[in-house]
Image (cartoon, rainbow, N blue to C red; front, side, top):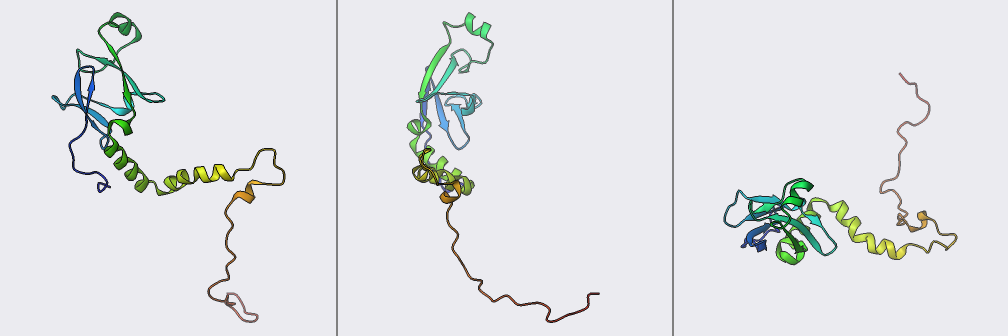
Length: 158
């Protein structure tokens, strides 16, 4: 599991004037100066190009409050846009993907086959093609050993 993760210094990401280590192995961002100050990547809002977060410079962490509190402190809070994980940490992202593929081989194979399946899909207006036609054909195999009858003739069952 750990063979894909090289020994290296983690990338530093500046969020609202505070430096954070991006650790994809633990799926978190940790303050460079205070390791107890951290947050999960799952707490970020994912956008089409990356992530968006609301940063509180007082706590040096994500803003954790109600909509009313946000309206009161809107001027001091910072809304920060971050690029994708692959752009912020290409080496870590590559290791994360390889580890995921090792842990989920069936899903990884299915995901890799998606472009192939999409290309093989018939046009909706084509007639005579069914989903069964798209499945891979099983080879016609003869048994390796000839089948033997276990009982010859008529026998009495006990």
